[in-house]
Image (cartoon, rainbow, N blue to C red):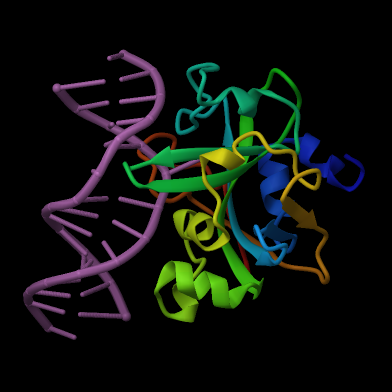
Length: 179
DNA sequence: AGGGAGATTTTCT
DNA sequence: GAAAATCTCCCTA
């Protein structure tokens, strides 16, 4: 816990605060791939767009646990997305990591993505592909596993907007981007 | 540069 | 059986 205590304040607050934090995935060879979080979205059990809305299931159970764990899900038949669980035990909530600014492991990210540098980590499934995150990372505890989260090195301004790719509860301004 | 369709399979109804 | 917290390709301007 310690420096990650701010995650307990809830998904919306945490989503805004997470802008500027640095997320890294340690690779099999010990190297890191990752960078600064520049786009997030909040999801909460009171919100119809959230996977936790209809109660706890096998897939979403980690969202209902304590903050600081990883919720990874598979979607659209081919993509993984990575979330950081927030709030307290019994409350289903998490923050989706939508985009990073890479500063470590760029070469490996290029090999995995086969795309121009500006398209390596500019979407939630792209982040997972670049960092090598998949269902085997489900439920990992941040900073006690291969997934690392480090504090910002400078202050970031954020802007709130509607979330992307959802059909329910579209009006909430729960997407945060660095600006 | 931007929009639309297709890919593909897990999850829950 | 339908929808899905997406991405990429291909098309038109």
